[in-house]
Amino acid sequence: MVFEIIEETNILMNGFQKEIKTRFNIDFSLYNKTEDERIYIINKEKINSLPVQENAFLKVIEELETLNYPIKIKTDYKGHFIEIEDHESWLIEWNNKADKLLDKFDDFEEAKEIKDYYYNQIKDKTTFTANKFKEPYWNLFFFNPPLDNVNLPDIGTILNWNIKAIGLIPCVGRTTILNPGAKEIIISFDSYQRLSNNIIETLKSKIRKEVKWDEQTVKLHTESHFDNVEKKVKKKSAYFQFLIKEEIRYTENITITLKN
Image 1 (tube, one colour):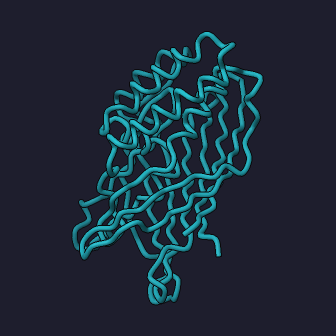
Image 2: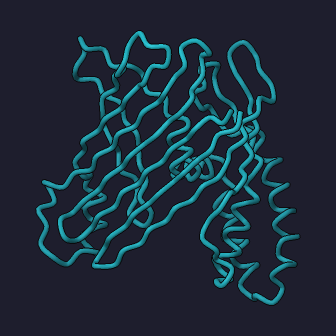
């Protein structure tokens, strides 16, 4: 299965605005299956992005990240993520490819230092997995929330959403089916979440103006379009919004679409 991913981020902070848009394909291929588990190989094909070749540091990081793929993962039969499969072999292969990559940057003295730092971020399987789920499309792709039981209103689902340079925001929300009985049902997740204390402490050092922190919230809305006949996801989308009046406006739009 091939999915097209579109990610858009808009940031307004301290009067400075930045817009980032990336578009790429993910090839999600079945490698092996048992009654209870599936193993997939994920490949990433970049379609377009802003050029960074004028900045040697960013160029090295971009190419090291490209070497992350292919990645082999394990899920249960329902598609819930279990783990990255065969991480040790993957790491050896990544390291060999990264060493060869350094030949392209022999005139950039810091290239090996950057590579060694990056290696330290991915050598531990748990840390590497956690960092992958900080990426919006990984986070959304493997988010399959259970449907809420209307008779148990105190139960909610948590989706951690990452804001770079700020951290993870746990978004507690509710899950509903918007159009039950349709051929293609839409499963919606909505969260209206107050900021956690660790995020507030991080932001206090970045914002000098007086802010009523206990009133600050984030919004998150996701949708999964599931074909009830073919038994597969056709599309997923997420909209994340974080606002502090006159200080910060941070929004993310992510769309994952199954290509024919």
